[in-house]
Length: 157
Image (tube, rainbow, N blue to C red; front, side, top):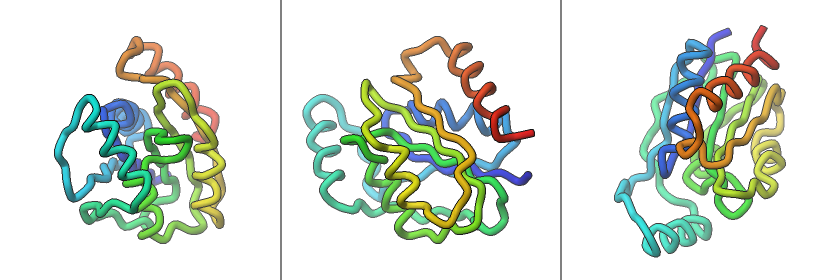
């Protein structure tokens, strides 16, 4: 099954997960990036994240032909209980219909209703899996890989 991984990563957590999934699934990976790619830390990071939750940020064009893939694995950090707004910008600007979809997310302590929001943004597709990770870059990478591999087995035969 031809697979694409499409993800947004602010602090590297979702990038870590996507990299392992790319290898595990022998997939193509595509990273969503905002037009303004300035790294922020401390209060500036918090303020920027809050501002991005309130508006739809511009993202760089992503050269992926959704129709070329049977399975789409989507990943985003949790911001305020929802997928990060750059990821939502991608979804609102992209038609994904009739696909098998798996979701992954990273968070710093709370998922909120991220999977419900993912599903509402992607009606018309078959959801085959969902998984969450709390700050994966701060966890043992072998444990993260094992959890991802077990998850992949649930929807990939």
